[in-house]
Amino acid sequence: MTRTVTLATCGIAALSLALATMTASTQDMMRDVDLTSPAMVSAEMTRPEVEAVLARASAAQPADFTGKRLSGLDLSGLDLSNAVLRAARLNKTILRDARLDRAILDQAWLLDADLTGASLKGANLFASQMARARLDGANLSGARIAADLTGASLVGASIADAHLGADMRNQSMGLMRAVLRSANLERLNARNADLSRVDLEFAVLRGADLSGASLKNAQLGGADLTDAIVTDADFDGADLVSAKLIAPNGLDRAKNFDKAKNRERLIRE
Image 1 (cartoon, one colour):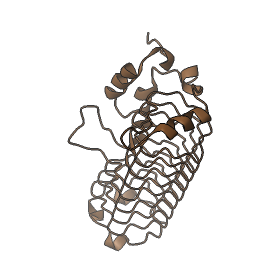
Image 2 (image 1 turned 135 degrees about the vertical axis):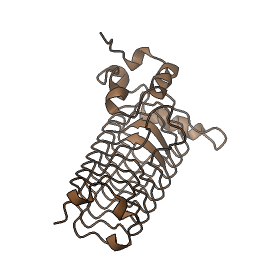
Image 3 (image 1 turned 180 degrees about the vertical axis):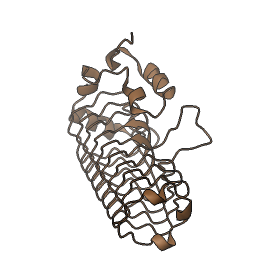
Image 4 (image 1 turned 90 degrees about the horizontal axis):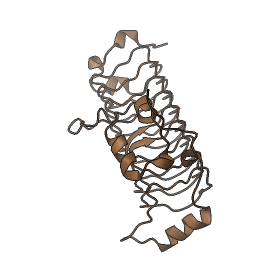
């Protein structure tokens, strides 16, 4: 019988080892974690204490919140640029309009977090758990995102030039790539983004700008791309089963659309 463990009784090293040996599957990532434990829903610092750490930080020594419990705090508007938040717990934390440019959020927990209007330019989000997070209007341009964003909202957000695709040169940990299954990506700016092998099943991409994006081998089953801009987007190997591709802009200039899978099962009207 599998024994449930809480993050209160496992150190950061143990957590990192566990995450490093898991696949990108949400079920595997959360199977032995008690999401209702105090370690996942409480905070060990107050906002003033977080601000004090930020005030002491410098370019040489950025603020370090590795493994800290910060769930439920209101950290809206704070400048957390370059901060190290590796394996931190930020579940339901409010980070509206916060700056997290170049922040390290690898293995962080941001379930149901509110990052509306936040800036995460060049941030690292590797193996981060962000199911149902709100990132409407957020700027993640140039970020490295191999996070689980199942059911998240990124309406009007930007992932321009961001890297969400799987790195096939280093897959010892399984297929690590972004998961945006059932996410709301309406009017998303994904220009020149790497979305190769990304899970976009049932995602809403209405009016999204996918110009120059790589959708190689992406999973787009059931996705809604109505009015999406697909000029120079690469569909090589993308699975389009039951996807809605109604009134797309630039489809005649898309790359390798003839190599997409299940084109005959597209919904075009």
